[in-house]
Length: 282
View (cartoon, rainbow, N blue to C red):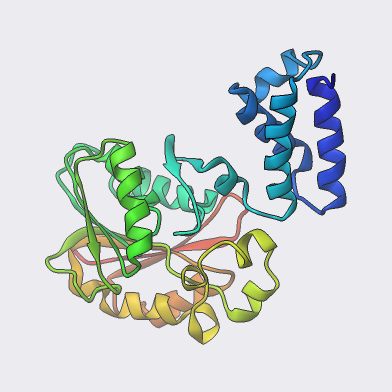
């Protein structure tokens, strides 16, 4: 019978031949899910023999990953901002950069986590931003809007999964059904061009919804549409933060410097200028 170490080595080699990024880690994560343990626990179980059922179950997951299906879809979940979220084809897989957006909002824009603020997550997708901010701001009213009913159904599952009672889900094409004003608007809209998606990894171009990835005007059409209207939905002293693509925050800062009282560009952890922030005067 094959041991944990033997099957991990074989799987990692197979993934490398298939061009899978992070081959060793992915193999470990998949086997840990089959064995019902944490990934790091595998290192204490290298000599453990696997049953035929375990090997069979593992092989099925390996086949899916070899076809470049995202790990998050195979597992059916992703960890985001300390929360467990369901993940599938209905919405974009939550990314680390979007976690950073939530950190900026919570630590820099509104550090008073007990404040009864009103938050809009525009284009919520899986509900990741709304759920993350709801877990921080217990007294906030959070509206999570998306035009896709499929995405909203996934967002609803994630809100319920994490027992977040302060999130209202709303079907809206950006601001079309939004009423009232907010202290914070957070948005991770489509910001890639068709050419960028065509050259993206298969996990992105074949499994993420195209509508959540591609925007016209070299990826900036939706960002500009949102920012043209955002000030009408912000309270005095309110702020909008948008996740953007390469080179986009600088262009937005030039275009919308007069729209907001103050604009700011912040980098992500890889030092790319990733986030545009517009603030209304108090």
